[in-house]
Image 1 (cartoon, rainbow, N blue to C red):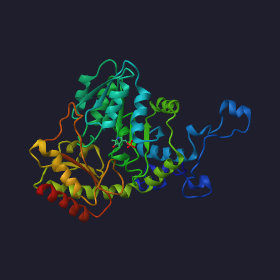
Image 2 (image 1 turned 60 degrees about the vertical axis):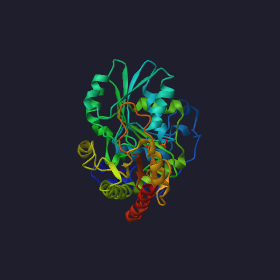
Image 3 (image 1 turned 90 degrees about the vertical axis):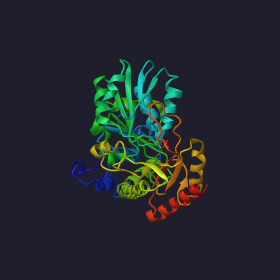
Image 4 (image 1 turned 180 degrees about the vertical axis):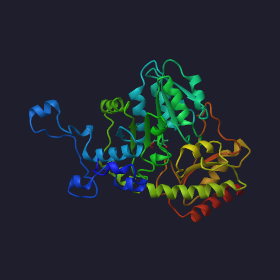
Length: 396
Ligand SMILES: *Cc1c(COP(=O)(O)O)cnc(C)c1O
């Protein structure tokens, strides 16, 4: 940690993003940390090796490059420690494996990122862990679903594709009263717009593939823990061997330096488009937590510092049999928005959301749900592109 860390708490977020995690004086004054490619680390003598009595011992256990990123993230999250893993999905699965055991009952929000559900249903169930999906709007009511063997409560807010907000503080309090670990997939907000540990969450996870990377070219995950849960999380990651590569770690730290201003732009453009969509005839509803019309808006306003660039809208089509055709006509007319998975990059993307996996929380009615990732392009061009989409879907 840099000499200036003590001052960091009083600094603005962009200052902290620019300087966090690494002190140039630690490496000859170079502004960025070295990319250390390493498996073997040499020890000076057998006794030091026997006791592993030096800072770095083997590549899987950290290098100056991964330390720089992990420390930068700890400063943002207010966490005791952060593990770095090779994908956002691994940032979800590793903590589940760290804290669940056979015979456990765990609670997962129904609006969860689909591959998280798949991991619980396909793999945790085989390991003897029972998953129950709960309503994102449950709040303190989650106490009524807790069982003596409930060990994990997993949250994600806003929810994937439909953006349901969760009362994280109320859920964390109820879960802690029964001794469960509280986890949150905080990818949408990043620690800039929501700090899970300040709301009682024990484990905060991120697909750094999204905004920290920012360029749709790196897969990466980070998991940050509070003091009580750090040792068990770190131990699990070392046991599993799910370490991150030095080049990717470097790229994510590089991305963090500009993430604040990128997020400001994503936020501003997405809000402008969300308001514009809300006023359109061919849109039933816009699913964006920062819109006052949105169901979870009050929670967002109370707990979050901002909104990122991902939201959805319901394209008007009363006949469910026509949902796909209508959505595909819209999507196929887009020229700037790419059709592709993931988000958080500089470029805009669109996809029709598949909500068939929901058990408790219902999909919005009135038409297909289109999810938009608003990139860094000029809003006027994005609007024109969406106009073309609406025109094509009307014509059909
Ligand atoms: C994308 C995403 C992930 C997974 O990230 P990958 O790096 O693509 O594996 C996990 N959680 C959420 C909420 C995501 O959006």
